[in-house]
Image 1: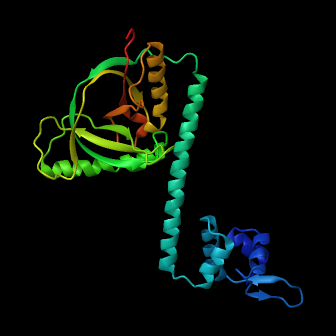
Image 2 (image 1 turned 30 degrees about the horizontal axis):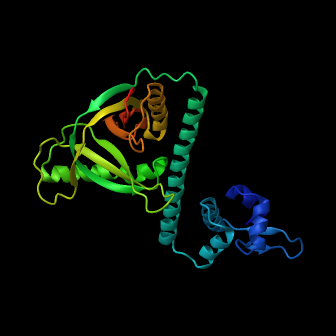
Length: 284
């Protein structure tokens, strides 16, 4: 047997925590000396301590841990619960990482205020484009997490359908956005994933929509380098150019995104052209 101090060291927890576990009946010592009151533990109890610590570290409260222990959840079920909790925490960490990157990008943008270079913004005409398209709904245009979660899965699904029907892709993939409010104050948008297909023949009921995006006579465009979670940097550059040159954005000002180079998983190396349709030209 081990003293409480020895057991705490072996289990990498504090003596205070072991005393608390004893007080609430979560992990009682194997033996308590009736004269000294000293607590003693066995090596076998380390397995229980490991379960308690793992569950607690994964966000379960102690009363929840006690319920799981008391119900004698079998190892397979416990592993499943832990894997699910781990996946939830991993997703939360990924979201927090995206938010942190956004904060850093916002700070860099604030530091560059007053001397933002708009020299690489190009005014161009966008010809009509026939595309294969799938759509989904995101919470808002300014929520990159929701956009990513809803837009990203559409591309592999659309590629699979195009390949299945033998429809060739003739240019870089793109995304565009349209408002889809369900009531006052609702910022819901429809996200559209699309591949240009030119004049390719498409069979009936292919599982995707075929639409022709109308021409845009004038669009302010710029190339964005890096993850789309930081696209607001390039968006602000385009906005400054539009304001400086007396134009106005057409509609809601949503940019069309043309993904020129998108190495899988290497978002820092993404190259995306952002196109903002314009309304009134200078002098009109």
